[in-house]
Image (tube, rainbow, N blue to C red; front, side, top):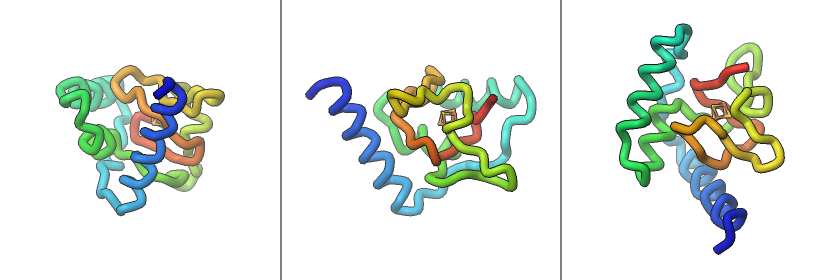
Amino acid sequence: MSGSEKDSALLQLITQTLETGLQTQTEPFPETEVLFGEILTQLRHLDPDDLKSKLVIGGFINHPYGPDKQRCLECMYFLVHRKWCDLPELSVPVDAEWWCRLWRI
Ligand code: SF4
């Protein structure tokens, strides 16, 4: 399987997982560097294959979030041409319309 085929298979898997209604930790949003760093630390301690925990701790949702309708599309970690989250602790394919609580601009 090529890299892009793997990305698209993983994107499909994440899409399906979120569609099952997986309850993820969208709150609390990390308002400070310290709180942001604490979530990254939790993510670093996960088994690299533990996709579900990554989605839960990251607080992933499959639609824009909050009154400002925040999305991956406007996040500094989103690689638009690859449809990819470039935050090293996440490193997963994402849809432009999704969101997670590591969102930053
Ligand atoms: S950090 Fe979160 S909001 Fe930003 S691109 Fe990655 S998954 Fe999307």
